Every structure is written in C-alpha cells, then in structure tokens.
Length: 193
Image (tube, rainbow, N blue to C red; front, side, top):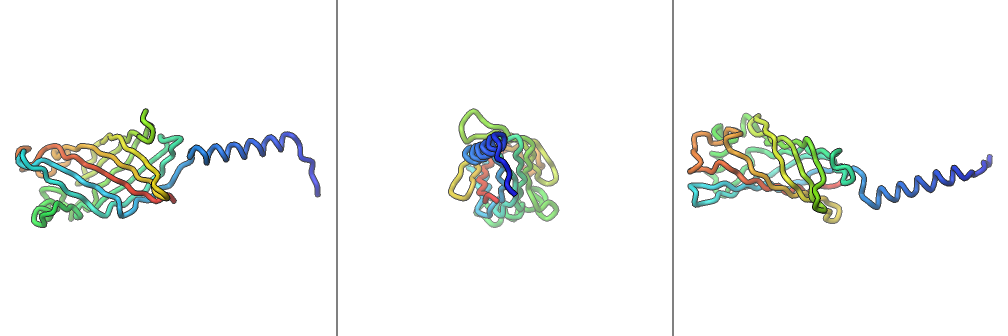
C-alpha cells in the first residue's frame, strides 16, 4: 500500500532530525553514572597546630545521573566504607575506626546524597547541595565541583570542609590536638551507562 507524503510529514521528520541532532550535539541528555573503584576521597586535618595529618578512604561506590542541559534534574548517591580510613600509621587507622571516631562497626558507611545541583557561571563548574551522613548524623553540605569528560569516563572533582564536632568525631580531643575543621577532597571517576 502506498501513501502520499505530505508537507506536514516532511516538516515533522525534519523537526525530529533537527531535535535529535541538537540533543546529541549539545550533550543535553541525562547520563547515568556508575562510580568506579579508582575514585578517591582524601582528607587533611591539623594536628597539634604544627602538623597536618593526611588520609584517605577507599572503596568509594555509588551512582547517579547528570544532565548538563538541566543540572537541576541531576542526582548523586555515593558512599565509602568507614573502616577503609588510611593515614599511613596503622595504630592511628585502627583508632579512627573505633567508637570515639568513626565507629565503623556500628556505622560502616559514610554517605553523601545530593539535594540540588546547579550550573555555575564558569564553564564546566557546578554547585552541589546535599547531605553528608557520618555515624548516622546527617548535615547539609555545599560545594562547587568540576566535571570533565576523559574518554569514555566522566570525572567530577570537589572539595569541602566539615567540622568534627558536627559528627561527634573525637569529641574528647580538643581543637589543639586535632583541628576542628577537616578538609575533604573528592574525585569521582564515573563510567557512563
């Protein structure tokens, strides 16, 4: 059976082709992201006001979706094992896993969940608002993050500062022994699904 091709069908097809091209050319589509094990969480905190303790967590995992055309539709959920804390001194690492600090046996995961993502005035930069949960205590966090495409991967990098007292971390240690502010750096390496 043959049918007559009308101008409206041709215009509809052209519109669909242009819309498809524009969507892919601008990257204006949601990308489902899977956090890869190579991702990093590092931190630093002052010690006795003259030293800086640096450490990391491993085993970061999570997922999310990111839409560069509509970042407000994006969402992320990531977590890391509290027992994976590593500062280069085994005795200190074991102490940080105990009840006084991360209490990793009772609270095995440290988690971040997004609430709002917005575009920054700077190309490739975004603003993140979310919630950080440590030891079942949730507090709001805000930070800027960058997003780069590296081959088939997307890399998000961010930094923020938390207060130890907000999460009851090392409460018996004053701010002279262990600084109150802890600087956190996150590098999420994500596979696009």
